[in-house]
Image 1 (cartoon, rainbow, N blue to C red):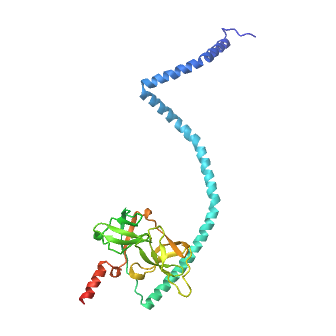
Image 2: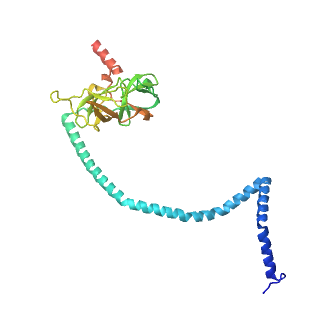
Image 3: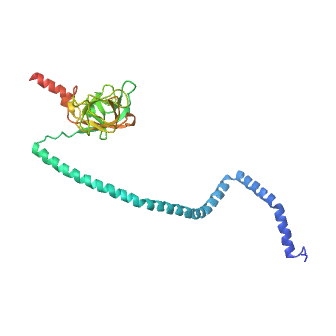
Length: 301
């Protein structure tokens, strides 16, 4: 059956054909018009853009929530899967800590009782100041650095310089507002130390390398030199009165041809702040005020 062109169905088919023929041209014209409108009125185009963005933002947020929710669920499942192993590890560590806490309390009580019975004289309370490292004056032949604290701040020659609980070096020279720190790795650095496990005494000798060596290891001359193994901790021995005993220094890094090298706990390039500690040992430090006072008192008596 043929449809008449004057019928509604015929007019609709004819209109659809026209739209299909001129749709591309209409889209090109619309794009060109929008471009001209954007060039003519930037404020209007920006307002329209923001209006469209405001209208689409809630829709995009709703669409994004399921994906974020799924990601959160997956992450929670992974965390729950690892939670049991983590709890078991924490329980084991907690049991070890409780054990060592009990041991420490018992040893502390025994130490107090023995100190009272022996009338032990405890070490004096240490005074300290914290200073900033303002310059690394080290080079190939010198390992030292400059700090922004000096005699005005109570810094004296020979005082210990530490980072946290670890020994860095000692004060070599003092100005009014600055001081030079001689590091453990310097060629002129000599520190009496002891191997923590075996209690073998030695001298930590710097040689301008990153790993100073252990010299003059004490031991039985008949039995030969004492054995030193990599990984053993090195602490100060307290001999000479320069430093109190027990300050951590480093660990034995290598033993080659009878020469033991120590890796310090602190690298000089990592230092930003250091602590200058006064252990009250000024009377035995050469060049300090206490030593001068002692010599003067001895000469006048």
